Image 1 (cartoon, rainbow, N blue to C red):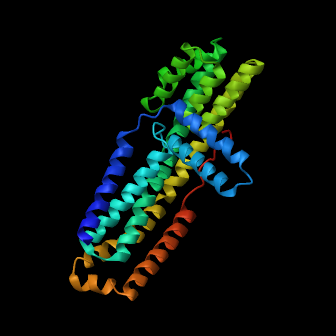
Image 2: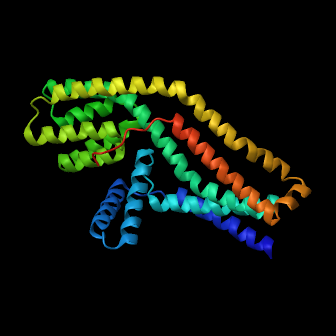
Image 3: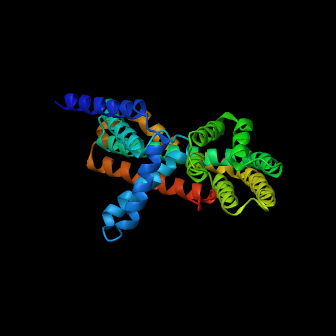
Amino acid sequence: MLGTLLGIVLATGLVLVFGAVSNSKYTLENLQEGTATSQGSASGETEQGIGAKISLNVTKLNYLLAEAGVSQFNWKHLLAVSLGGALFAAALVQILFGVAGLSILAMLAFGLAPTIFLKGRARKRQRSLSELWPDLIELLRASVRSGETLERALAGVGAAAPQTVSSAFEKFSIRIQQGWSFHSAVESLKFQLADPVSDQVIETLKIAKDIGGVGVGDVLGRLSQTVRTEARLLAELESRQSWHINAARLAAVAPWVVLAVMALRLETRQAFTTDFGTLLIFVGAAVTIIAYRTMARIARFQSKERWLI
């Protein structure tokens, strides 16, 4: 009976993960509409605390997916992958080791893993874009100073940009050709780029479109210098501190690898199936999390936040 139940849980996890990954035909417009709805609900349901918090969390997850460069997915896909991964991991660990404490920890770890992965990917993408944007801003500045319209200037930036961001600019050009207003098209571009520097550039262009382009070249020049200086400083600091993060990860993972190897022995599994063994697993997990978070917080630098969204 237990084997059948574990098989069902294992299959359910696989179905949820596969369904979430394969069914990713979710347009940028749909995602933005859902995000806008969530924002409106969060502001209009202040009295309904639970509803407002759910809407706010949905909005944050949608922005996290965009910042990680996977805006074709939405929060439902992330939830399905997290739930499916948690069920799959719990069933697999239970089948392999038969230790309830390890199964619960595996379920929690794999349930949170997609969100943690997306946050790490978003930080790497932000660093990559911060190194890329100074040259793109200079190109945009030169186009504006030569008399190009903002629409054509952004299209020119997209033609010179690497593949990681060029598709967003190509979609912007397509929307302009389809008759979208500049503000609507540039808001979609801003949502897809999902980067603090991108927000600053796009908000500058929106103001220039409304009141005229006088001085926009000088503003873009100063912004380029600032972004270049920040990127250089951050890269130097992170290169010096990266070994702290790697040491923290190694120190956190090593005891659990040893425990997994030891759990292959029947005597060890029997010891950890007792109440004291389960308590020991949970206490060890809590100590590991606290120690890792402390070292990571000391070593990691705060990412630049997005204020213009």
